[in-house]
Image 1 (tube, helix red, strand yellow):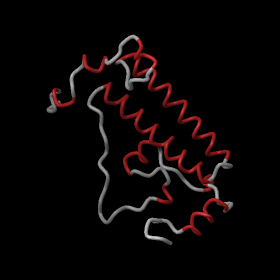
Image 2: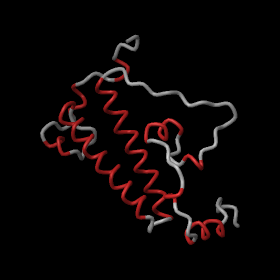
Image 3: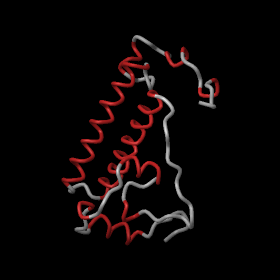
Image 4: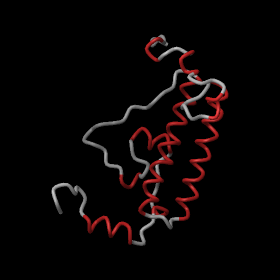
Length: 143
């Protein structure tokens, strides 16, 4: 192992070639995984006595953004897993479900509140529409 390689190469090769599938492990819900920073409950290790905060939305807009973030996080975690285990059909199906759910939630959010990204479908008609709303520091935080 050279000084620039932080991973043990043999461990990585074994991970790619083993018959171990995540289908046999339990996953957190997207909400719990997002809060803990790890979708895979068997791989989660709490640091000392640290307990993640429960994320709470204060209004409908924040609730929708939080749900989009949770689902996107879960899809991303599964995407990383599938890089190493590309033949796990149950995780591929779950990844596709999360990806489609994220697209659906994003479309609903953008119809109601405007585009989330510059390349959003709604950005053609409302380009830079996020400038019209209040910025996070302009909102009343005592709600």
